[in-house]
Length: 253
Image (tube, rainbow, N blue to C red):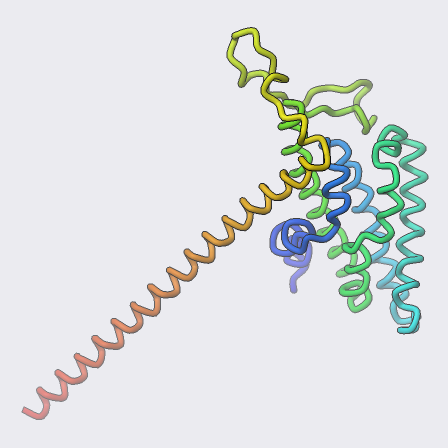
């Protein structure tokens, strides 16, 4: 596998959430807003990439009998680092994510990549794998967050939980322009349920349904193209047989 394919596989082909359904806990729990989804994604990028690098570095020195506990210790070390950094520099995000920061330790995605990839590949390949898979995970979280926050509030805010680059919260996108000049508020058309747990399941289900539908349509087109190619080959073979039979008949005459 090339470096490019190794990096890009986590975005579509092997996306942790939309394909393998890994990390469902944060995907449902911290995606009520784009900011919390992005914040969790940033933490996972650091933990997964760092733990992949360290696991690849020490893989030859870890006995098979204690492999999994050793990986958990490595992952827990980096989770402790990001927990302390988040509490120091983004306290609102730290409070919003709550217990889901330490739960990164048992995220199936991170332990799975350590076991399935980093323990068997070079440091560079493990770093690229960790970076690609974690960014794909972050992308999926943000997509769910956009879907839920827009439907629940009609806008996407920045600066509420992530204090970087802004001094106060700003609306980076809103749906006010969709509302006619009738005095109505965008809040009259929103669905607050999507900020709650049931809305998380519904949002994820809708997104997965759309992705699955696109996959089915793509597979149907590929199958139709394959059948057309088979029919074309049959037609060409039949024409060659007819031409050969005609030539043989001419020679016999």
